[in-house]
Amino acid sequence: MAEKLRAVPCVKCPMRRLPIFKPNTAEEIAFIERLRIEQVGVPAGASIVREGQVKPPLYSLFAGWAFRYKTLTDGRRQILNFLLPGDLIGFQAHMLGDAAHGVDALTDVVLCHHARDKIWTLYKNYPELAFDVTWLTAHEEGVIDDALVSVGRRSALESVAMLLIHLYKRAHALGLTEGNELDLPVSQQHMADALGLSLVHTNKTLRRLQKLGLFKLDRQRFTLLNRGAMERLADYFEKPLDARPLL
Amino acid sequence: MAEKLRAVPCVKCPMRRLPIFKPNTAEEIAFIERLRIEQVGVPAGASIVREGQVKPPLYSLFAGWAFRYKTLTDGRRQILNFLLPGDLIGFQAHMLGDAAHGVDALTDVVLCHHARDKIWTLYKNYPELAFDVTWLTAHEEGVIDDALVSVGRRSALESVAMLLIHLYKRAHALGLTEGNELDLPVSQQHMADALGLSLVHTNKTLRRLQKLGLFKLDRQRFTLLNRGAMERLADYFEKPLDARPLL
DNA sequence: CGGAAGTTTGACGTGTGTCAATACGAGTGG
DNA sequence: CCACTCGTATTGACACACGTCAAACTTCCG
Image (tube, rainbow over all chains, first blue to last red; front, top):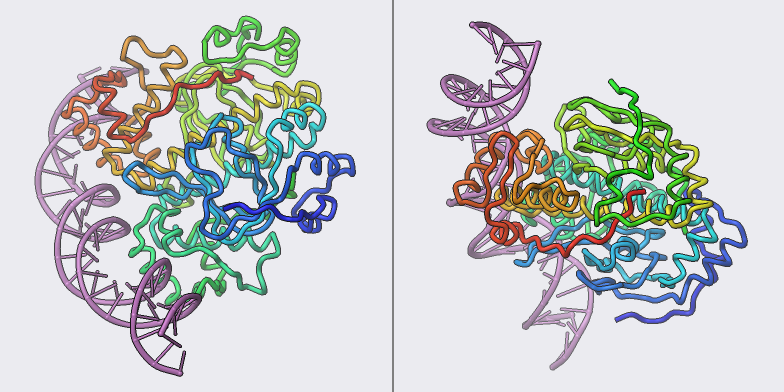
């Protein structure tokens, strides 16, 4: 299911050009290059890390969308958060021993596969990078905090608005938007599982929001029409994103 | 609201005796001692970190219970997770700039107040400790993942069972249990806010579980009566806790 | 003793889940 | 180009878990 690719050199990583990412020194980039074993491709819908997998590999997401989830034994699934380029995969599992959650690809995906056993070298010799890794972990925790508020205390209408504006902002920061449009490779089932709602109710809520003129969503194509109303409905006014490490 | 205390030396930190915590070298402990500015006490019910506070101080919880939460502008509150001795407070905020969440004391609490500006020194000169800090962050994320599954996909009955057994296990690892009993300084309102439920429904669910004989809860005194049934109901079978850093 | 905070219970309303049927879009093969 | 199929989206009818309101009760504590 995973295919090895001819890899882009880290120095030329196209993400380095994006304004949200922090710059690295030449030596740091050289180390990252050595940290990376290979680039691998995974097709849409496939599993990247399985729930319960012991010592799963350490990846960073180079291109494409993915998501983290947990399932109960009877099949109920909760999506924990969505992963976009620049996010780490399997780091929590690396720290804790094994993966308490699964990771699936939402689109075709390109991953940078890193050497698990060099992470310690990173902490020892590249404290800046170690700091960045911690930053990424803390940042992801913040995202999940917000998700928890949605699922726990927001109505379906508010939750859906929150999720969409959140994804829009993240995608925008990565240059994945065109004007106020965006390719959103997220099915209604995914949204339902992320928000703790049923598929049917998610659908009805999406239609309701569109009838209100807040956005348009047709065949994975999302158009943000009334950002202010979305933010007010979601009660979500995040300050602009800080510069973040790419690793 | 915060009172300075005569501090226990870190070498004599009583938590070091607990089996879950990893040992540190003498030099590391000496550094932690220098990292720590003072110990402060905060009374039950008081705020430790305010929502939105910029550059909040960096604490670790030495004794007592606390919790992290976020509130929507109309007052709805979601508790993100509970904090027990050994947990860091304000580290996410330290990384991201300001506190996206508040922290309140559940009981009278003793905090170790650390020097924000020495964290970088920690990363630079004590990679082992930096690694530990990341471990703590990753671990907390795992706890929130579980909370998200509860709030999103578990029924009220299951959620309450999950929360109680989770807290019981954590408290037990810290030696806070006596037999199968435990002082649980968590009101029903707190549980409701942690689980995304209403106060009334939380109460009815608690009574129902007690009538089923799973546990007893009287005046903050919790007695676990049928652990197997609790774990099955919550669909929660965690492997024993790994050794964790105390910082 | 008195008042505040937390807990408990009952009655009733509603947001969201479940079930079931239909429609639609993207592929596939004839 | 037309069936055919399969995943996804849509809609309506109905059920129920959980929320809201309101009132009593209990514990705590000054």
